[in-house]
Image 1 (cartoon, one colour):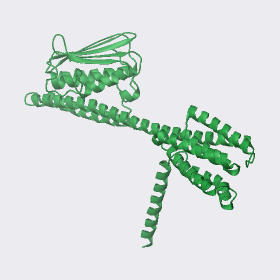
Image 2 (cartoon, rainbow, N blue to C red):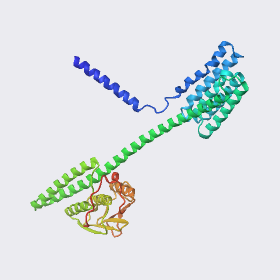
Image 3 (cartoon, helix red, strand yellow):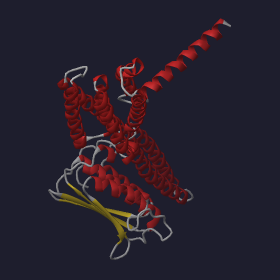
Image 4 (cartoon, helix red, strand yellow):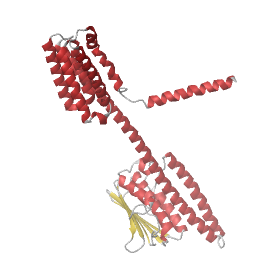
Length: 412
């Protein structure tokens, strides 16, 4: 019983801690709201005291003016914390009415009623911004100073009243502007975090598509070869089965590396795999390579293009030959994959007209991010041609290729 009660207390403490953490993370930065400006209305207590003590002529007019000032002040302050309402013409009308009431009360009574000028400045600071704020506060400070000089009975010197009037609105506006900037930065940070998550999801989905699509195609081709060879050549059939096991194990390794974001790519490795897969499918591969060695990131991107092109040849082309041509110069490199088949059929799903399915679309985006291009379509003499072009030595970025590539391989 005691243990159960202790566990219940621990759970309650844990829930309270979670609620405190949630409130802390979702707390609004900056001032808590318009209520922070309401206590400044206590500056009008002197005027309120004059009304009750009978020191103010026409107390009913003074009381009505005091009520109107407080009501307008509260309305303006609450609208100042809502951007849409703050920029509404109604807010400027209310500010004008508040200024008129302030000028009438301060000009008519003087004394402690002059303290309504700093309160009016606070209200202006919640509504006005930039140039209008500077003009309004200067005009208000000068007016407060002139009215105080005219009455000669201010609770403080005219210059002090003018300074207090100006600084009240300036500080209020600066604090609210800073608060809004902090909230915008916080919103921007959250949006950037969401964008980063979306980019990582897109990278991961493209990696899985390229990895599994190619691997499954190779396994299917080798399984068909093993089925055909089994009745007449058991040794070769067993070799195909061993290749299937090897491809499956390699696929598991690549998937683990893709999940952790550290998968390495190599054009030479992909070309070797392409030779094996195409030969098993009865397609004769040809590789021609010329030019200087490539940067690791460029090799990795061309490796992805090779993998996707081979996958499409195995799935859709019914080709008998497939040629890979890698030609590089000091500035750019071009990979061309050509087969003599019929290409993707008309009913093959296509995500991007003229580019092909999901894999080629993803590769197009990757190469474009690296400053390159990808073209895919029927060849002039039949078959299907995939052409990728990239700048030499300009990395595509780790996020795009899914990791850091290995060193350039020697030409095939």
